[in-house]
Amino acid sequence: MDEADALLRLALVPGLGPITIERLIAQAGHPGEIFAWSMDRLMGVDGDAAEPARRICD
Image 1 (cartoon, one colour):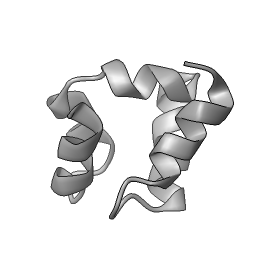
Image 2 (spheres, one colour):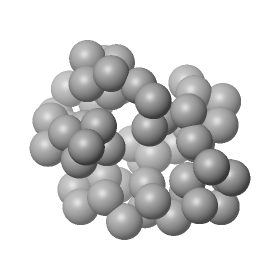
Image 3 (cartoon, helix red, strand yellow):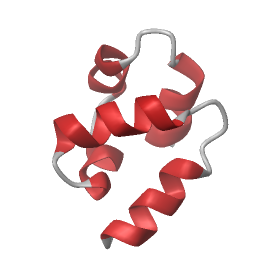
Image 4 (cartoon, helix red, strand yellow):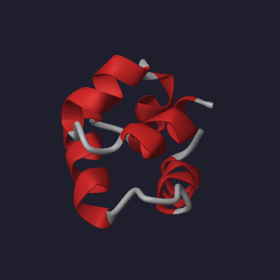
């Protein structure tokens, strides 16, 4: 997945705000990598983001 597609997908996840997206990208290096992460890894970035993390994993 290219960077623009991954950024768009992240922006469309309900409950996932711009600060959390920035944190995810900072840890992943590339936005597309985030979609391969486990639920536990996603929750490690923002523990209050259970529902957005589930949506990313689906």
